[in-house]
Length: 355
Image (cartoon, rainbow, N blue to C red; front, side, top):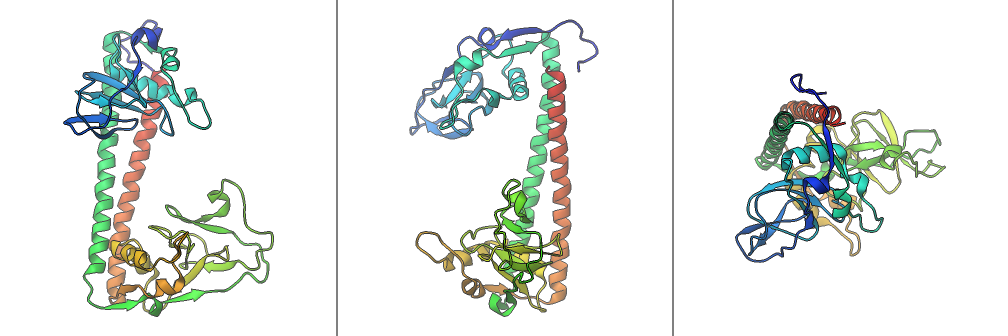
């Protein structure tokens, strides 16, 4: 895919001829005024400005090996980062091409992933005339700016939702202990009937165990002792309690979970959606921290959960709050879909503009 005004073959040259001096950084953390760049961004300050100008940085070692970042200014750079200062091409053009190239293919080493300067020097870079390079940069940069703007929209919307939820549960003068508004579930799959085995994922909530463990089912062959959960029931692993670890079953009528899970449901004077929002508040997180038990692995018992106080409002007000937050979450889902589409559009252009 090319702009129609350009024809002719592109040049292909090894990175060694485009950026002859690819080296590792040498700066050390210190009290100073200059930003210190590590493998994924600014990690602190340094007292000496060892580097300046327009540079493309590549994470050299570790889990982030191959990560790219553009830097333009006076700064320090650590030794776990490779520095590319191209002469024939702009750093931004090179940045876009290496995104397409995917430097992960160069990584070696199982214990400590690594990319060397020697590997980078052998990568062949395609490029056309300077004006064509510039137009490619401008187009891809516009998409990057839109992706960055979309990320900010999502971030601000998430902050808004969290702020509304936290404020809503701080404004009620009346509270009850959770033990008065929930009931524990202990029904077992005694019939031995085949049912969907579920796990709780901190980000996704209830998911099928095969999805949680990459197509593997780790449940026992005999699931008669597994606990049954139905729509709007809650469950959590007491040994893995943190933000998002108490999930509400939303998209399945029923399923079974490991006997180690603590399961419960709301009583008639509380909407399950209202309780679910409470579990996302800072207030709840602070109360959980006060009730964690154990020396090796901290756990939250059902008894500890029941001692936590929840603000109580009338059912109609609960519905109003739930509907308000649900509409914001719908908006958030739409914005995230836009972000996915922008990223797909960029990947498509990268794959078509750089062959």
